[in-house]
Length: 132
Image (cartoon, rainbow, N blue to C red):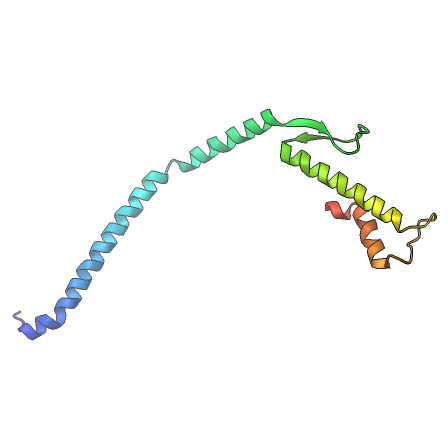
């Protein structure tokens, strides 16, 4: 079919954009295929790395006493877990001393502390603070 120059002028932008879109799609499919090939071995590499981390964690774990030094609390784990337990123990001791400041000899809240404050401290000392 013979087209006039005006007809070609109308359809040429469409043909050019269509050809460009086809070229872009071909490049994208090629990029996807390359990415799939490059990442095919990643799951096994990740598994190997996880196993190595677990092995190293077991090798670097230590047991340490935490708390006030009375020898009643030992923690086995890495440095971060031991520091966390130490922080919990020290926080509990601070809460206990704070509570003692506001109780009389019978353990009743003093007027300086509201019932809500007293309940919060008692709950934290009972273990609610530790997530139990």
